[in-house]
Image (cartoon, rainbow, N blue to C red; front, side, top):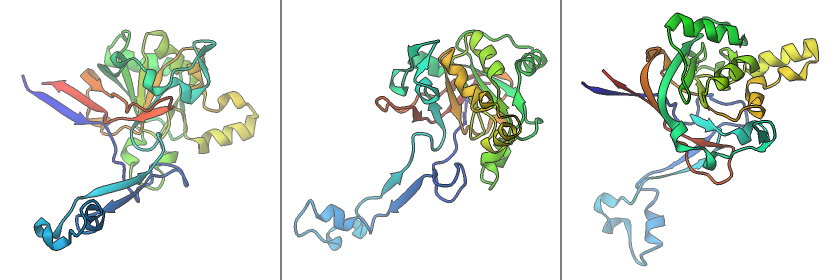
Length: 258
């Protein structure tokens, strides 16, 4: 039996639109020549000529949010409370056993941008793939956004998960979900239109806000979901341990035993 690893994470990189304007990461690259002065500051009299090939080290300086790149959102991101009144958990408090579990993929790539997935659609997809959810399964949602990563319209692409769909998953014992879109919810540009038409604020971030009732985490900006089978794989998505934070970056990986 051969073990296969599929990278489910996007890059942290400059010049690719993976977040709205003003929220993108910024990476400054310092190469082996540029860093000689920094190294020499530790060793008086040292020059580039004293170093092998005149090189010091490579290092990168990064400005980013905990929600840049592929990351795991904690319940604290969604609201100050979870489980109907408890203090919401931050990313450093998430049980590690949540983050290494069997994975299940729901394929909603045929849904239009801005569509909000219902509980009935989740049930129908589970019936189609002939799978019954069990507690702590990690459920990832393949949307039309996955194929548009790197395009200018990525942050407005794909469907989103509604409140009822999210609650249905959580009631089955799921505690981590994920999407290849910018957000677990439908992109804001589409929700904005519905809000302006109806004035109904409950439509805003409805999937996220389900965490007020049942605390959960979700992965955002996943990648390569289209190559996964519906189930029969494990997902590893341990978040970076940032004290009292709303999210942590993760190198999300699917593991298959072929």
